[in-house]
Image (tube, rainbow, N blue to C red; front, side, top):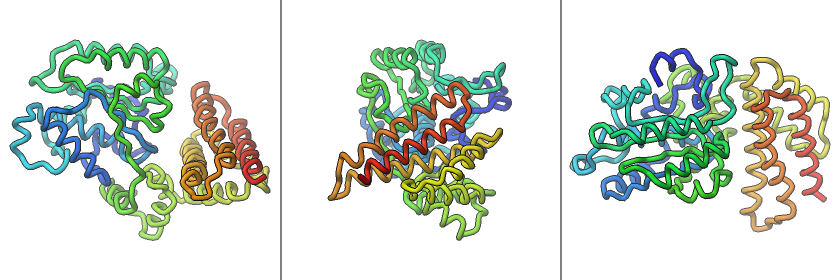
Length: 362
């Protein structure tokens, strides 16, 4: 993609007004994963495809771009082996770093939901024609004899046709090719595609790592008071995305109200649910909508995952929450895909949550 397009078109894989992952030169909390990448590369045993799995906001895309930048800046493993390297850092003024920041590197392609200039909205999926652009790049000779790399962000945006086209490319890869796939829920990927990839599962970030991320982003995020920052981190469930939403006063207020509603589902106040539906459905209020989805997803994650790890785990009691969790992502995707009114979605979601709470409590 030409730099001019980047300047004028929104990017589906950029979180709100923060730097894009390709523009982030710091990655915190995944030092051991970086060391393993370096060892695999230097030993000549780097797999041809990776899936970076984990919740949104834990650094999956940042790590994928960091690995791509390192490999393109160090095309010869033998030469790289002569330097002591503890991480994948490449200086921002390196030629490769500048090319990647401008999306102008000939051996790198990004697959994501593209911006439709006519409709002024993002495509709802990664299309098969997008994957064919990647196929064309892999048919060309790599510059400097290095890797040709495809970053896909994210796997959940593939449709069946594009997933199968990508699978065929990964099954018959050209030499020195690499596929870096970001997936928030790897289990939802096409099984045959997932099986061709080495899985890298990133856990929620520790408090210290999130603090480092916020500091590295600089103002206005790093300028938040210590009390507000600590409160946001404590509520964020290990996600930098959640922290950035919560550093906004409206985000903290919304998260607090949602927590009270979720903790009182057996006596749900439908007037509050209707008020929430009106709020998140308002024009240009996508930030509150995303905060709501993230908070409910985290709440369900706690119910299902932590409940399953409890010594008193009861699968029958956890099943209703798991069903709502599964339905949440599908309903949210359908609402976004068809640009549906968010109010019915919110009302239906809380009806399902209340039913799950009753079923689990009975």
